[in-house]
Length: 443
Image (cartoon, rainbow, N blue to C red):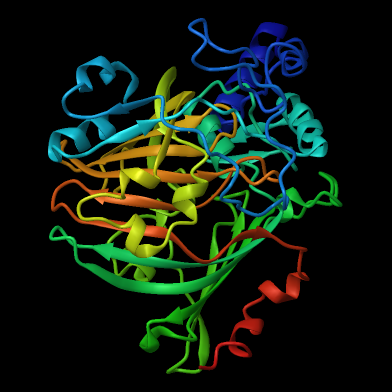
């Protein structure tokens, strides 16, 4: 018979081999009701007073769940240019600094920090429960015992922090119509696609529960409306929480073939056809999909200037927002916030066109606000900015981003809205079934 020491050693070895890690203790979780916000950010402001305390976020707006352009009318408190860059360099991400180096006329306007992040009470309650029940499995590649909230509000690893981004709250169901523009190094705009996107998150169904949850994180259905030769094409993605055991399921409807087919290539570093291949599928929403091609490291937290409350940019017209080389600084809002920094390096035996990536996650929402991607030679290849907006519910949301190709000087914008983001009532699950695509895809 095994003695206690041997039995304990075997159990420890089994846990290590299974890749299962425990969540935080009950004593740690209590911080979510005292020194931390319900989603895990520091409740207090910073010592300098340049980051205010969180006081509940933005909950009262004219139309909850919709982007309004009149929420922020304040003026910039500072502008960073190449001339005064040294004064602010310690508060800028590497990618942001690279933009100043590449473009002498690049500018970012700094505004007073507004901690607008908010979520419904039931999301806070679920997050509190997740804090002590959530588990990472498969070496961090999958998770279990989570539902309806941030899974790891007090993260202990890079993988846990990225799961917080993947499961960040941005409403339960939404719809928006957007354009993807390619802007050449010479400043010429080319329309890659226009589409209507409908997203539903069973993980955030407030009528559901952990016991009823079937493991489906999100349902996304996108209908192409332009250019003409793409009109009518559709893509359907069913995203599970278990990215390893179940994995993403995707379908594509092609009008010319009049049939729905599986699309296993939608993911990772496959070129995204909606952006004419200028970005990869896993760059959408700053990062999406499985974590298994990288080793993830949590580098800690720091204060930097990030995109925030960009209602003005989100509602700007194409011609106003998209200027040569970069998005028009006049519509882009930057604020000082605390971010978690996560670095990803390609795992042994895996491949990806980006050898290393770095992500900057807003502590209040867990959304990735800035990202950098490096090639095999260590050169900064892609620098990406989120376009977060304040909408009441969700208190801070996002539905687009801009990706700068730092090697050739072009950039991709997929935040230009034809029909702005708005939260909607949920549709039946059958609406997000592959059989439903063919019936609505005719030109």
